[in-house]
Length: 313
Image 1: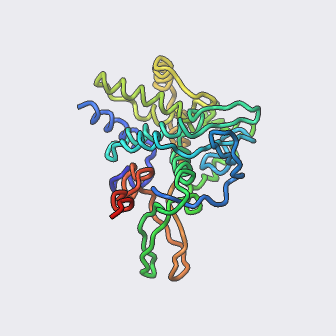
Image 2: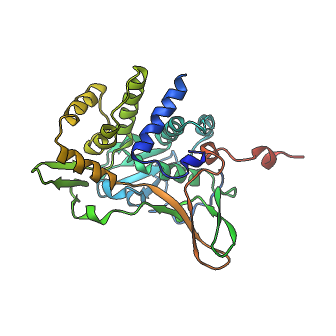
Image 3: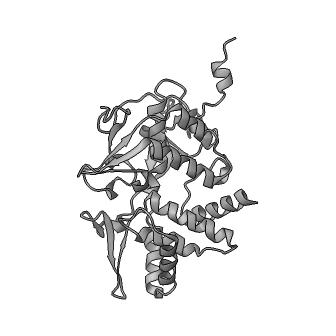
């Protein structure tokens, strides 16, 4: 994600191929003032968790109504572990982000149940990583990308919540959204019915394990299957390898109408962070930039040029 090919959000086949490439290769920052908390900045526990409205997440509408996301700043030991991320390895970047979410994020459901990061929607990962960063570095050293306005003004866009732009929701899906289940329910031309929703991190981790196993056995996973099936496992936070194999057998037997529809429906379900925006200081016009990591993925929590910043002459 640190090179030019990864500046834009990964999706569908690109994401899966990145997993395969990274697995194969394995085997052969800054202070942002914390202002305007989403719900409030009251500490929810003595571990310094802060409560935020889950609706502020890119996939906020897909959580139970009343769910709260609890986030705390990263501690030194967690930043140390994250600092070892391989900026050129997409798989390692995702895993290191998952590790920091595991330490710093909880979900609190309306019934009081506390769930881990595995319940977080996969497309909310990056937003939450940057939210952790805001809480961790609250004074100076902003992380920003360079941009140029059409008027010729060079500028920087800070990577914080107020400047994030989410992928737009496809209006064609809206009438099929079931607010009770937080899923999409479709009845298609062949009479069959399907329920789809954005997969959680737990489900995606299960499929990553499956991809690794297939790669170890020199097998090529079915990319269409890996693209579609995670969206069909609503309400689950994991699936066994045997379970995935059973789903694969079912998938290979579906009729053409079902496949064509599911492939198109999932193609419309692009969520998460899309780009950055701010207003030009020169002309006031809106300026946008792709989401990318100016100092590599490691630069989210590792301060760039820390030697120069902290040396005392």
